Length: 137
Picture 1: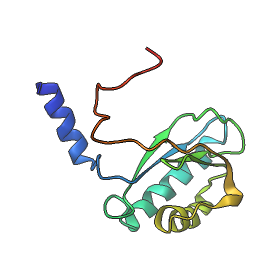
Picture 2 (picture 1 turned 45 degrees about the horizontal axis):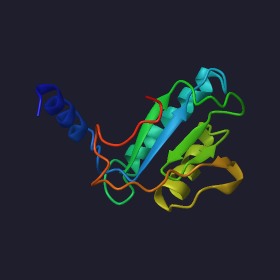
Picture 3 (picture 1 turned 90 degrees about the vertical axis):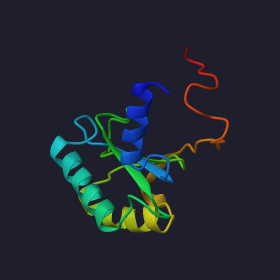
């Protein structure tokens, strides 16, 4: 293993990558919502994520703030993978219900979802970094 790979694996281990069951991507604007609304929602998600211990355990969930999910209306927009549930209007006020109902109880909030695109199941043993096809190459 190269030094770069060792450093990358150590960084991933520090972040708990490999133990998460879900990954939440949240757009914070400015096209789908104002930056203030997007950042307030992001801060609420971070606070609730920590308060509920979602960094590890059976509901472990990674969260990532993104600049754009290319759905530039009715935001903040949020997507949860691997389920592929796309939410609209995810303001700070909606975060407590979202965290409790979707991330903890595993029940998506249907009235806030505008589309679903689940990822296919992946086999961790056969899909390692650098293996498999990349159709865009």
